[in-house]
Length: 228
Image 1 (cartoon, rainbow, N blue to C red):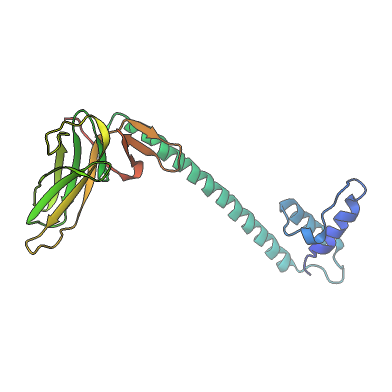
Image 2 (cartoon, one colour; image 1 turned 90 degrees about the vertical axis):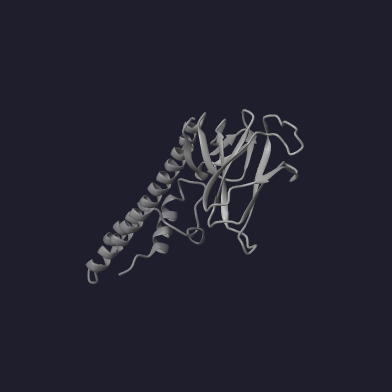
């Protein structure tokens, strides 16, 4: 014997019609909650045909299915809560970086205390390396040759342009590394920025660390650099 939700809802409607000014039609009901499910089970047991009672295995199967659904719903809610908690925790951890000098994946930073610092890594040895510093408009304000060995190389710029102008703290400056091997092919690599965290923004899903006028994502931080 199977549960007839339509008949049960009809009974509910007729029973409550004298005590409420509005009822829900059969067509509008697309789902049932836990209390309604249990009421249906009781209704089924009370109104089953004595000569053809509900099959025990079917009844148990229905209960198991419902329990499974309830468990999955609870697990889903719990996972959602855990995800929100972890996101909040990760964002709050960003506050611990205030005042710390960090190294993070990126290529744009600001001049702090008269200098800007980066690191670049070459995946293989290069024949020639040129390091360019670009301003916010993409203009090259400084250039010099760089180290060519495979591996990581630090690069500190004192904020003095190629024309001898001393730039003030702040601003956005981007490092550009041009590396070629002996055959003139480009050498692969990546850059990082090294700067002091001056602000933390946790209003979005991902914490953002302010480094002067620039910023980096908390997830992009590779290390905290020890004070010299």
